[in-house]
Structures are given as structure tokens and as C-alpha cells.
Length: 322
Image: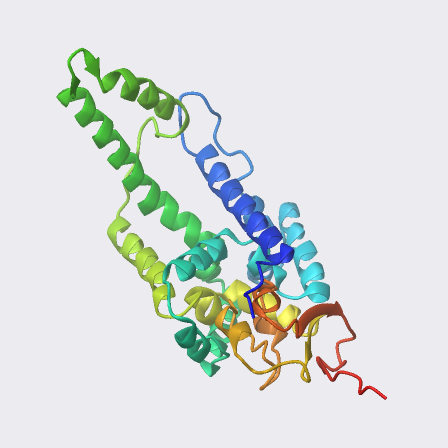
């Protein structure tokens, strides 16, 4: 049987992930002091969409900033449609997804390790610690929330390193002035550098204590994807855990045709969240990112997502022909 092509929901999800990731970094660059911009445009949008920031802020002060109420919208949609935010919106999740794909593991290994693991419960204990600490006035969410972690890592380690490296390369080109005859590389590099100075490179790049530590933590979290797909999202992320609790019984549910399924495991191999789409131990909506990879990977069209009551059976048998 020829392998079928990637389904349109997967392409739509990939486009959504790409768009929100680009938006996040564009908003980040808007906070950088450059000669032509005014800082602070909209970078708080992703934090406002985060229910964990909303809940921890409320528990810590019994007050909520007006902008954070956007997190209620995320929670309501999650209540109905499951943990979609992790698969379609979160830029940190998109980075983990890309790194997991680059790991290039064989299908057999992905099938063996792609299913649900009891260690995925660890993120719920981390969530509990974050919420208890918020009640005690300690803001752990500012350290382990995915947007906080990504923004801090980018601001203190990734961007300063990229900024200094860019300056170093163009400074070397200017001083070395390489070329052939009268054709000089600087004829192209200097206009490019001028544009970067206006729109990308910080006018004055601050450096921070702890940059190396934060950078190493960021790299460690990123490279853990080579051990398990979306390691952060499966085992650590407290925001994902909160969304998993909210979306534990969604209306949008996976439906598996047992009679048509041959238990090949392809759906598990491409599952981002370890949600057990094969149904052997029960599909776990609290771990599902609604990436649609399982449905796209299934060669027998045994998996579909449908609007079902929370207590409805997620498996069905083909009707017997009379």
C-alpha cells in the first residue's frame, strides 16, 4: 500500500504554528531598542493568552490585570476542543516539534517510545508546585511557564549571542574587505549591515549575569527532544498540564475504528504528546495536542476526530454486513 500524503489538517496546523512563532519573535524584536522603533509593542500578547499566568497571578494577589482575561478565552476553547493550544499556537511547542522532527529517529524506535509514559504525570506535580507557590507569594510561573522561559532565554542568551555574532561577522568583512579585483564583498555586506542595524541589531546590547547558565538550560531543554519527542511539553510544561486538566473531557474527540485497525503503530510513531491514539490503553485527551499526525499517518483511515459527548466511546466497530 502506497503511503498516503500529509492530510490538510496537518498542513493547516503547521501553518498556524509557523505563523504564531514568527509573530512571537517579531513582537520580541519590537521590544529591542533600535534607532527606528518605539519599544513595547504587543509582546505581552502571548502572556495574556496563557491561563497559567492568569491563574497564578490571581492566586498570588487575588487580582487580575485586565489584559490577562484573554487567558479565559484560551481556557474556554480548551474546555470544548482539548489541548489544541499546545499544538497550534505555542511557539515554544513549535520549536520543540521542529527539533523532534530533526532528530530523525527510525519509525520502530518512535513506536516503542511514542506512547504514553507514567513520567508524563511529572508536569502535573510541577503545576501543583507552581500554584501552591503562587498562593505563598512566590512566582514560580515566571521561571517555568513556557512563554516566560522562551522569552527569558531569547532575551538574555539567544538574541545577545546572535547580535554579537552578527556584528562580529560584518565587522570582519569590513576590516578584511575581501573581493576579486575591484569587486568587493563590502559593496553588498555594508547595505545589508545598515538594514540590520536599523531593524534587527540592538543599538546598545546589554549583557546579563547568568547568561551562560540560562543559555545552557535552554540548550538542554531543546536537545532533550533528541531523547524524547517534545520532552518539555510531555514531562515538564506546567501550562500544558493546566490545559490538560481543563481539556480532559473535550467535545472534540478521537474516534478509532477497531475493526479496520491492524495495530501497525504508525499513529503512535507520529504522536507528539504521547496520547496513545492506538487506543490499546485508552486515548488520553489531556495529553493530545490535536496535531492530527495520527489521523494523517494511519494508512487504513481508522482514526478520525469528531464532536462526541465526553462519555461516548472513542472506539467503534464496523457494521456487520447482512
